[in-house]
Image 1 (cartoon, rainbow, N blue to C red):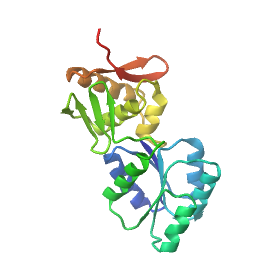
Image 2: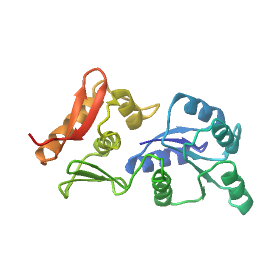
Image 3: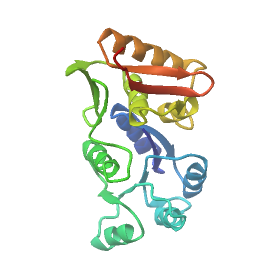
Image 4: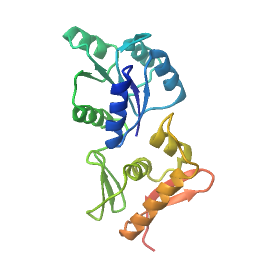
Length: 226
């Protein structure tokens, strides 16, 4: 799942990218308000992690413009501003949650999951197709109650497909969610992950199949009994 992280501290941005990736998120990190606006114009994100103290302005300006456009993307403000007044201002301007630095990565991830579980958002506690169940918080896949073990990116591909089960997911969307704006994407990277997923699902007795819609993308659906 793809996030936009707006953070001008390069070291913290790198740590967030690594920590979020371990929890199944692909993060695009930008360091200025202008870069944030450009990223939001170019791509759709599941959620935004927003610092307020940016070198070219206040992150609240980015947030206000987002809400003025009636964009409801969940925004978690991550900042050193800790006063009650600051928190109230952020929430009034449209933030969905507010986390003060220093913080624990585990709490940040938990808060993102909570935001994405809200009605109308993208993430349920578990996803099911046939006898395949994906626990979105534990990042664990089960086939007929038996745990399966995949790489982080294989799990990320499976999640993208299962969240849109029965619908075609374009290859470009899969690439965007896996690698973000700056990822180094091999020409057949997605095909490799799809091949591995198909093989393990088949070997484990999964009642779900990943179909290739040639020239369009991929679709996962429950395998019907003959």
